[in-house]
Image 1 (cartoon, rainbow, N blue to C red):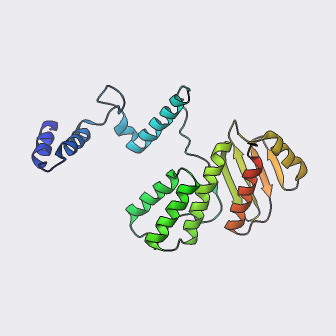
Image 2: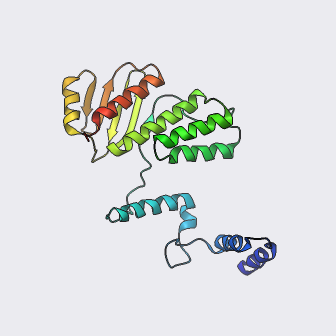
Image 3: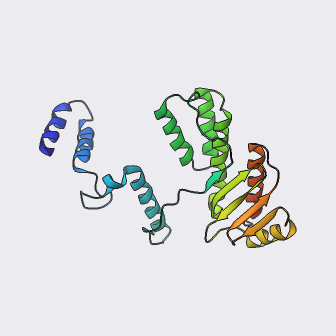
Length: 223
């Protein structure tokens, strides 16, 4: 059956660049296997290409930094952020589902604030002014970028307050954290050694973003 598929692939390719397409068809037929290994069979089909590439990226970054890849550790996709407001690309703004998925991927993969700004400019140029839910999506992603280096696992912010959930080894300034809790005890409170809860009025998304952003700046270690 595989031989027949290969013959059909060869017969269907006559144009320039057919060699690459033939190799792609062959990859689909036999399975991708280990992309950087010697074996031609592997687990990529069961894992899925996107997850496989994410795992590969994590391993490469660990080796570059001189660490042994922690293959058993669950993948960490960055901090979770909940602003108690819709954060999405509405269908009436981007009707094409494939295009929406592409932009979701591009937004989540943006490397820094500059990349996010470029994406916003591109979307406004192509599709018009951003809806409020899309603005919130960009704000949420920006907060993820700022929180990740501090070792923050989750951010929650609602109309009356919220909390930060730290990783086991957060990269915040301990002195600043202690000072914050001692000097503003009515606003900030550390719970279980991993949750920094804050109480304040934040009726709008803009107020929540500004409050969390200011808090992250106060926790960031001095340069």
